Amino acid sequence: MKKQGNSGLLNVLLMGVMAFLIFKFFFSSKPVDNKSLEGRVDLSGQVFQAPVSQLETRPLNKEIDFIDQKIPTTDHEVFVETLLCEYTFSPNGAVLSGLDFKSHRGKDGTPLRTVYKREFEEREQGCFLLAFDEKTPYVYKLVDTKHEDGKHFVTFEAEALGWVIRKTYQMNDKDYRLKLSCSFKPKTPSAGTIRPRLFVAGPFSGSVVGDKINGVINSLDKEGINKVTATQENDYGWKLPAIFGAEDKYFLHALYSVSNEEFIERAYCKRLSNRGLFSIFESKELTEGTSVEMSFYCGPKVVADLGAVDVRLQNVLDFGWFSKLCKWLLLVLEYLFAQLGSYGWAIMLLAFLIKLAFLPISLLARRKAAVVQRFETQNAGAIQSINIRYKGDFVKRGEAISKFYSENGISQFAKMASMVPLFLQVPFLIALYRGLSSYIALYQAEFLWLADLSSKDPYYILPALLGVLTLMQQKTTPVADQRAKWMAYIPSVLIVAFMASFPAGAVLYWSMNTFLMVAEEQLMRRIFGFGRA
Image (cartoon, rainbow, N blue to C red; front, top):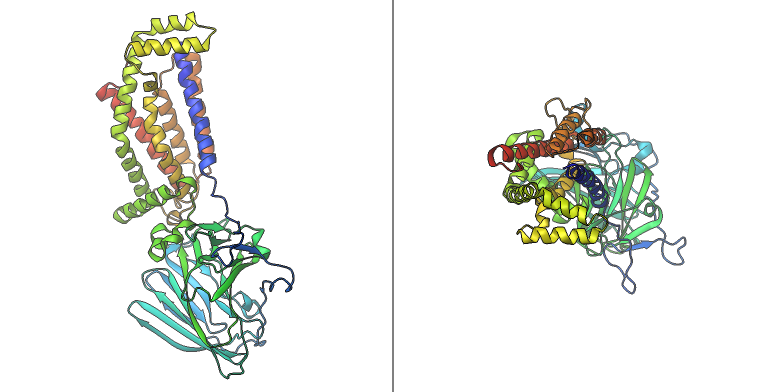
């Protein structure tokens, strides 16, 4: 019985090591696809490195030369409010100068903002600023604003280089699409050529601690989305991008559709600081009048919202190897929240539903494990004799024990049957941990004493509760060696230390799952007699 107790403790430690390795393996992001295909050109998402001279091809142009060098006397901003957002547009640059999200609020209760107004000295940082190689117009006139059929329109117009440039923004009431239609018309046949560049500011939520912006680009198959690395931001560009933009922890500003796929020849990034990353879309050289409609997603990284605009955008939520499972679970979580009105209760109910789904498998597995346990108890003497007889020969001892089990109709693999439900739930645990740790819906979501489910528990109540539940779970495993009982406290202490800095939403799910495991064990012991000798 002493060896049996030590074996149980060893299983606990092995489970801990295995869980750690699984977390390390599955939490790694997918590798970035930076390969260029030999012999093929102009593929959407194909990466290339810009040369240092025009001898090979033109360099990346990240600078802006304005016509207007004086501060405009007026700036009549245009405000547009949809069901989801509040947009502010400025005729200075005909840019988006403010974007607030009504459904997502910061610590002070005000809507989270991803676009901010820029002063005259920072006019090159305007969001959706249209620039040219030289003489970029800064002062536009407001042509029209209207609202019809759930759509809002704002139109600006300016003249430069002998061309008339018109920009029309379109916002929808019920989603986060922002369409920008640009038309370019030469005033005279001798107007010359122009090459427009569109500068789109990446999202930056100033109230989110540790927020960081990085670029995103579609993979070569146009289905996946890769992250732009820090080394690629300086001198790399991408041809004919299908999806291109920038993201921070919770939001995405990205192009996902162009009416004329050949209009945008390439896209690249411009980094101003850790808080500023611009996506630059460079068009082909225009020799005659043309127009184009570009569709952008400017909104939160929420599975349902991304999918409502373009299902490919959901790939920006990279949760590792269990990404698809995680997105599905988050959709279920959103549905439960809609019914309960609380993400805390929704997380707990989700844990219960997952446990309930695995209950039949758990009952069957534990029944098989109970049969093995009774057999080992009744035949402890015979098993001990085999162990003594082949004490120095592990191979023969294993063969003899396997034969003894088989002769009595028992499979040794059935000893591990009780572990099957746990291993089946590992993907769910990993997926939800990864999802709940970086999901905007939990940001500033209150539950009981918790003011923000996306941050750690400030009072460490949840980690401590999880430690107690883990200890209760360990005590359900019988240990004959009294000197080894104190070892049961080690996993509990490690859990508390490990989870102390985790987002409260993830710890809440884990705590609920552990509580249900303890409850399940007690239920089976008291009602069905599982686990009794």
